[in-house]
Length: 127
Image 1 (cartoon, rainbow, N blue to C red):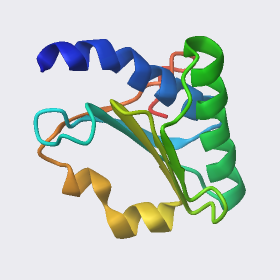
Image 2 (cartoon, rainbow, N blue to C red; image 1 turned 45 degrees about the horizontal axis):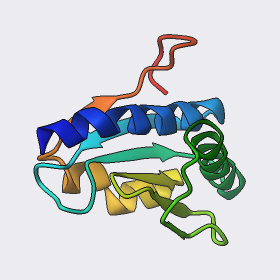
Image 3 (cartoon, rainbow, N blue to C red; image 1 turned 180 degrees about the horizontal axis):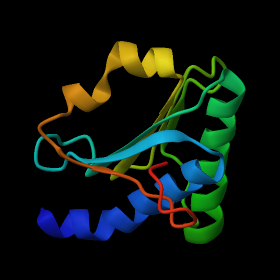
């Protein structure tokens, strides 16, 4: 199973990069393959408004389709814009407003998975 994470990490990083392109806040990658059968990686980030949440999700979709020919298997929450979930099978992207992120606290819930903060290549700063 460890091989899968190696293969899916570039997908997770590309999704995180696409989030960073739209100025997502506090981008986290959580490796969940050893604690869940849902996916290998979660990418979690915040958008400060509903409009930004939708823009971040659109950026992820556009980037993964353009560069990898990948479309999400499932998409949830786009119309509300408070929490958009994009399921790519081995990677699940969660884009939430700060209040939704705080309420659901996915980082704590999946805290037993290995976590890393995404650092923007442009600035070297945490996204």
